Length: 568
Image 1: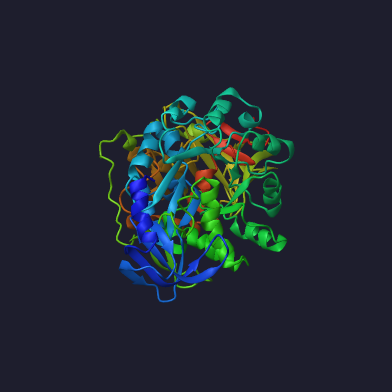
Image 2: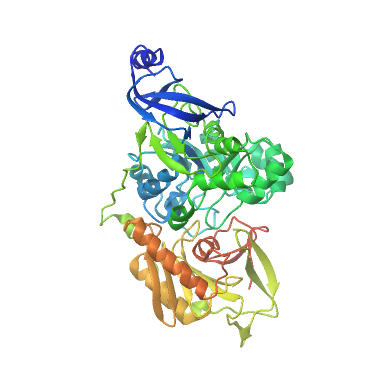
């Protein structure tokens, strides 16, 4: 802050001249002391200049006893996973009180490299929120992956001076990290002294120690209180995740309450959350609400949504609290228990009027990213023996089990039926013709097939179903339209959500996307997918070979715990 600017603000803080805005009559949540104080807040030029009832404003707002707390922060989010454009996601989530987003654009980078990252930065440059980026560390997620682009340390260097780039994105390749592989070591060194996001589900013992030693500062993959405690004891900051498929908040927060743990080292994140879930239940406000319902004190839950995250990412001098010098990002709540949002302010301005406008030209290369030949029937054939490896899904979790069992078959070939579905992943970036095929237990889609070009993190074309004809039609349809989700039954396309931007996002508007998604999900449940399984999200993650235990890639079944492919 230069002296002239400070001098102007200081005159307001001293009460010599009026503030631009004063918020009166509210109960201010103080995240430093844990108090809730009846006081006023003065704002000039989007900055909080003073807290106290002595201030006079050119414009004054009477909060009528409502609660004023800092704007919420999402500690780890992939904007692409909402399936709408980044600006549209902000349009929706900012109404839920989320005024700051720590974004890892590795989905876009896996498809389109630096061009994908630049798209995320450009799309969010002028939204009424603070959008920061962590540089994707694992593009591809593992060295053998068949993704669209490679994003290495040399590519990262040109972003180091960007003030919106905070550190290194989630480090999924723990093997390269703990073994100090040169390429990974170079990326870690680039961000020495800065936050480095982790991705270490079930990593424990000496391997976890080495992972923390490498400089990884946080993790969002914890699913049990025991896993949380081990990582907290080693100093890791924990992002408590509540997304669309991975819903870890209840187990973790109940553990915090039961063990009376300090909450300073905890934040909230959504990671991957579909737009329809944000519309229906909220964003970070949903995390706060649910944590309070689990027994956490309201102010502690608000701290986890604000100052804790700001401190971890070095933003605490401007965000995460209501105090002089902080940016005037506020959430006005009708009450603390139900976290009912009355209004949201970014830099002292009401955000309710913000409407995102599409920016990407129709002829952009980011709209042409599906390059593969039609899948041939013989490529879906899956030979089986007396027992076969099967991906066993778990409701509400991204982790899977590697189950060995007898599969239904004819003439030595797998025939999907009952709880067993067939899944195939088709390489879609470079037209290599690779197709991996496996079996899934627990998805239970009957009488059809579902396909997606959202397939973390390489985003190849995944298709799951109980008959080859519908699987082939679903894959072909997504190839023809340039990506998205589709649901097919009896040789007919029932529902499609076109995602023409990198095969990940749509700029058709969230209302249209949400309506079609809702109809598709409802129909999938009618076709047998269990009510506690989120079909689109789950399908999107079955190809990610860094989450235990068994995954499917264009090269076949991959055992994550053994870090090797399984021979059929």
